[in-house]
Length: 458
Image (cartoon, rainbow, N blue to C red):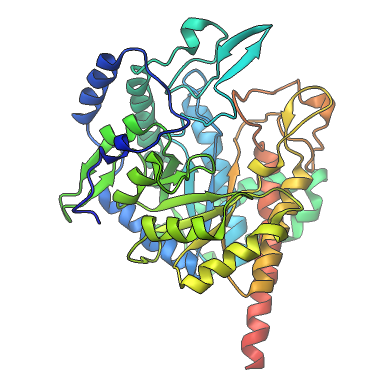
């Protein structure tokens, strides 16, 4: 497959959700410039992530994928990056406690600059403009100039992604991710009256940390407690950028996407003969595939065969996104298709995209209870089917935004206007993200108890 594939083959396929640049010569110039720049991630890192995901497929690890709906050039800062990274570390420790397996941490960071849209244009103040498609393509401002696709934005995206990865690597290995520090952050969250119901879990985590310290296992004696592996991911939407960043791995001689450790194909771009599937099938990175209500069993079979023809463990993650109340209508038939094919996949739950509503105050939002309900339905279906729920996928931020309603701090419809900062989809804030991790940990703990009981019965 890899020998016959060329990174430009997608150009002969039908393309959707991509911009029509007015100046093709300018696009070619940017692509050439990107092609001479160093890759943002390296093949060995992508292989390591694939090996980790292979463990998640067997229930020996759990995938936590989260971050911005669409990264912003103007909101980029070290503080914002640090705060989201910090929340993901907290979530990972809570999930590790619940699952008793390693948690694979994958950020929607350093590349999540493009977004699919439901329509090519939108009305703003009675004027029709091209839809905002993410900062890598056009600007958010409601002017004709800002909304015109500009290829030089790809260079800005590369620069921001490189700076983000530099900082994330420093956070991961420079002491910021020390497990004792993260545990103290969790305790701070549960000290609040609203989060008191999670205090027992936090205390158990603290007790475990004290036991390890008494046994001589500390950050000084065990490097694993002071540093973490952290990977990046994004939707492979803007294929001019992805092609320009594609590199040949000097170790294997195979093509690797140099833009991020993991790429995914969206629910709007998973056409079996489309450009996005064509590009992603050829790179060696782990690939995610969003599966919504319109995903048919036959399409899933074809997509699995195209994206993972060698049935390699850890290569393909199926990201279910149906909406609360719809999981039982769709997930079982897709699970049975995968099982019948004998396909190696990681099953992950995206409870965000199927639960977007317009609030009474006019803001696009996501009710926390709907997000939680879809997660619980995801786990319940896997329990009924005897299969493994391998991960979760959230749009979230470390900032104290008010974009999703509900949670222990009870963000209301009336609160949305106070700190609604997203340029695209509503995100869970830091408190809601950590609370959701506690609730997912309960599901993981229940699953672990069920497995132990089944093993004891045998």
